[in-house]
Image 1 (tube, rainbow, N blue to C red):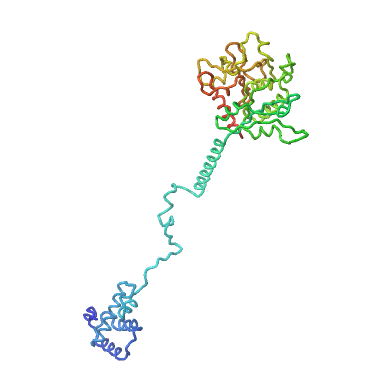
Image 2: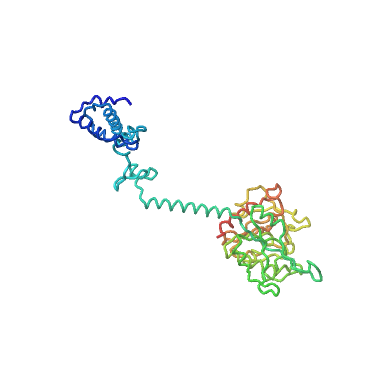
Length: 410
């Protein structure tokens, strides 16, 4: 190993050089494992500014130690190689690498204080209470949006009153049973607006065969609206009259069932749409009466029922202020079908006339003013295609009925 030029150029006092030589003579040969200690001793005995040793061994030892010391003073943390010089350099390396110390007053990295204040996403002047208030407000808005979505997207459930087929005397099979059923067109017309339809059967709480605790009140509670479909005549007994002809006695049993159903839905504040017979029943439910037969009571009237059935038609006119006219799209000649031989005679309480037959003034639509939506149509909108060129498109009436059902569902 060549001599260290730094060590050779620094003269040392004679006394120090002699002491160094004596130390070298007295010290036995160091084992390989003690190179670091020997180098340290040589370095300590020959500090900077001392003269170089006189012997070659002293120069070599002193040079190695000094070199190791110089490397340590330069801040090297690892040994400068194998051997005594490397070990000496490690021991002469001075202080250990710098380790950050965090005291009680020193901010931790990443904390708001270490970044010069509060996080940048907070607003100036924010306090814990203001942040909490914003969090709670955001959560409430999220809950409100979910609740609104549930209200607007849940499928409506519409009940339709049942037609009733009474047993025929002496018949067998189904004709000997009481049947309750829906006419297909009325169900499909309501379902065309993507709602669920349920036929509401009669209830029998005192039946001998299958008594039940279910009431019509329960149907009104769980359904969103009621459609009263057409069918048999309303019995004159229901509006305190006597049938003038035997065939006009009507269906008293169905009257009682549908009147209870109607009143339950009215009390629940839910919408009702009556079609044909349903229109007449709404009038009777609020104290009105009916013409038992239009042709008999109103000889000047046009035929409102013929063998052509749903193809029989007439035009409508709307009284001033009619809400029905506001629902329907404006047309030059509103035409509807006509399949009824009874009609409104005396208007019930709190009812208003919404449309009449243009040819004879027979009442064709009524509305109950003290409820969100209780309306009766004397014609059958379900018997013709919606938006067809011949008949009045009554889809807006159905849409208003369903809108009221959604708004009053809770």
